[in-house]
Amino acid sequence: MKRNNNEEKLLTAAQKPSKIAKKLHSFYKGKIEVVPKCQVKSLNDFSIWYSPGVAAVCMDIYKNQELVYEYTNKGNSVAIVSDGSRVLGLGDIGAKASMPVMEGKALLYKYLGGIDAYPICLGTKDEKEIIQTVKILQPSFGGINLEDISQPKCFSVLNTLRKECSIPVWHDDQQGTALVTLAGFINALKVVNKKACDIKIAMIGAGAANVCIARLLILYGVNPKNIVMVDVKGILHKGRFDLKACYEQWGLALDTNAYDIRGGIKEAMTNADAVIALSSPGPGVIKKEYVSLMAKNPIVFACANPVPEIWPWQAKEAGAVVVVTGRSDFPNQVNNSLGFPGVFRGVLDVMAVTITDTMCIMAAKELASCVPDNKIKPGKILPTMDEWEIFPKVAAAIGVEAVKEKVASKKLSYDKLYETAKKIIGRSRHITETMMKKGYIQSAKYRI
Image (cartoon, rainbow, N blue to C red):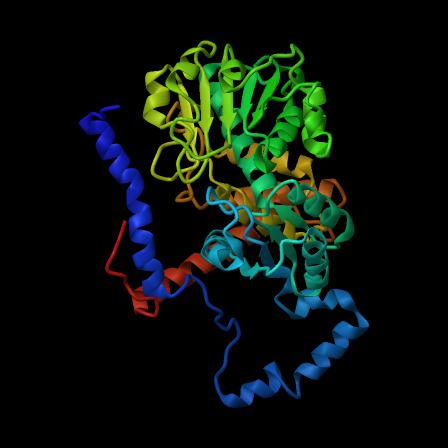
């Protein structure tokens, strides 16, 4: 198919970040490092920070385990754990090749949430070994971020660890994606003036992200009977006995698609009010003609990375009113980075022991509210990462909900949580900016 000049320009712009990334990553040799947070005025200070003075601190913790949060950085530390088995849209590329992604995640945690996060890329893909590794890492961290672990094991790994760990465990590909998608969906419905309880949704892809999104949508108020989900074998329905091996997908096959629609993506999207796609990278997974078959004023979430299932301009040409992708170079980016920094800032600050689905919904509502109703429009349904005040707000909202649900050790108010988060995140951003100005972080030749 021959492309016009405008489409060629859009494609060139879309490919630019990938070309520059290799040069910048090589220049900096990674994206994170460890720096002191205490003053060192002379070498004599190490008698306090290390031996012999540190022994007294160790013994205090030995007598009262909770003091580890008072005396160490545990309460501001998150482990980003991955086996590299499902990285972005790249698939099973292994632990070493996943490191740039995990370092990027750690950078986002620090800059947007003021949280010290550490890439832990595992040399195993065994489910039991992953679970055991995370469990024995608990003393060093305040929370665990599972990342880029393939299904179906990602479901059982998360479910097991949520039950058996004493610190919050979060799978960003599930809960993070679902939280931010729900936030965008809340505001997209306002644009088209439709209600969650009335709409029909086609969900393309039945992996970790869409399974969790479906769960949150249903808890939020979407009628499961009006959800039609598609995987690589077609639409989920009660006759899909091949799904029985996966509890989550089989449950959706039983609970959704009340009208027993059969077929594939085209049939699922016909007369749908919205499509939420997190499947294979496109373009062409969703065709323009499929969008034209949807109900009036359709919503299209095409969130595969690195290339959406359909290019945004194609979806618009086919009649979509709101178009969402997972990319920062298009309007309406559904990006997990809008969620997890604030989520973990909040749960760490109240010392929560878990992150529940209802906490995620509360955070999604708060994130959606960061775009006032009079500012919401088809090309602006979510805030961007530049609007850094959203992160203290999400932190405060999820922290308050954790206290309400009695899964927090500290009882703090919304205002206290907001001010604490704002101070910590502001400090982190200021440190980075100061290091850039002073030249400790060198200026790279290549820029986006």
